Amino acid sequence: MAHEKTSKRKYQLKKRADTMVATRQRIAAAAAELHGTVGPARTTLSAVADRAGVQRHTVYRHFPTEADLFGACSAHFFAEHPLPDIEPWRKISDPRQRLDQVLDDLYAYYESTERMFSNVLRDAEVIEDLRPTLAPMQEYLDEVAEILATGWAARGRRRHLLLAATRHAVDFQAWRSLTQEDRITRAEAIELVTGFVVNASNT
Image (cartoon, rainbow, N blue to C red):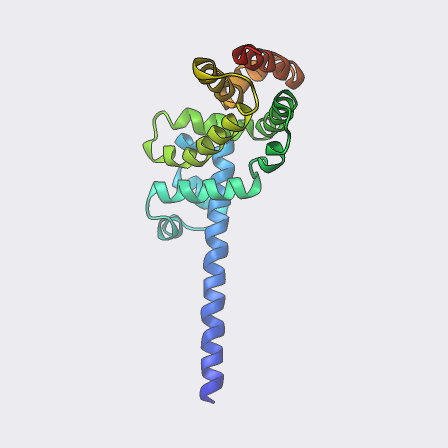
């Protein structure tokens, strides 16, 4: 009898824990959807609660601060939209070929995530708690820029200029200014940016 009570208790605790995890994930997903449409600055807790199908106090219980919700939302988004894998790029020995491949893969990713990143980058200017969620993305892009700057003959000051060019090449806002604002195609953007990087390498 005691064993049955213990087993039942464990089952109830596990079920409760699973329910809490599912609720937390539902709230994070709801916040991500709203951030991708209206943006973080215009997303209210009431709207998140409504979309997640919970009460406002439930959102507060799972995410006591706005920073907590932003962190969960970011984790959910990147789980659904993982950044391109950098390892295949490292294996491309020719720097020009590597540049073309990286830009094609990265710009395709930007095309599929443009709404979210545009909203978050815009609102990060006024919401301090949102800025830490951008740090992993920036670290990733810094690493990509270093990969792109590898293999060229540039040295010294020229190497510094090349790295500045590759950082600009992978920047979301730089991509957006070309394809979204100037309305050119991905292929045209890659052609322009590739020329920019090659010129910086002075090879």
